[in-house]
Image (tube, rainbow, N blue to C red):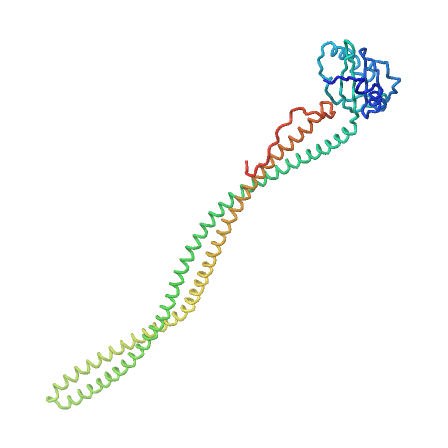
Length: 398
């Protein structure tokens, strides 16, 4: 509680009056009857009243109309009880000028002992400019906070969609990785089968070519046999002719040639049988040669097909091997993609957590800004004690 005292030994009265009269803040002093006994030039500028219009009149004329009725009782109660709720401190409020315009001021009240009672001095400073600047600042900060809040909500929704998409991508990538691994295994098996088929096809081609050579050799052998059988046929014909001549000579010899005739007859029979056998062999040889020729023709026709098949199998084997290499590369790429997607999903969750904290910070900022104004929208310069602790961003996901 401040009490104004003027010591004649330290500060002359005229000097104290001059100091108060020229103070940059408005100074109003009232006596024990609540009448104004001092009203400096700054007070005249602030309220718009001349000092002569105020001096000697009740101070309630300077109080907003809604407080005038109970103002005297409030001051007198302070005199009686000494309960200083406002006296000895300062507060911000609005006063009404003579022209009806409201002005934001900072009011500091002090009281002075006058006999057995108290007089009061009010020191009033015009803070309208500060309020205007602060109000503009709060408006801009409020707009920025609203924009930040809206941006946080939009970003939160976008990050939520990204997080959901990343989760779906991660699931799809895992399924694709599993499918690719299965496909790679299948292609690897196909490549092994193709390699075995290629080996079989090459072996079959070699065997077909060998079969052609065997058939050629068989045909050559049949030709040689046919030539030899021709000799046998000539011998059989000549033998038959000789046996016939021998029979004729034996018949001429009469009784003495009878035995020889029997032998000639048997020889002739053998020659005929040899002739028949030779003819059968020639016929069989001819048939075998024709069959061998057909077989050679068929094999010669099949060899290009075998060659084509072998070439195709080699191409299939090569392509399958390339597919195997490609599928392994795809499998590796999908695994790497899965890791990237997992990292993105983690980053999305981290960003989502950070956005939630940022949204909370924006809400706290709005609450803090609202704390600067009262229920009527007027700016308060005192701390209302309701500011909440602002959460901090974390480097790790929530």
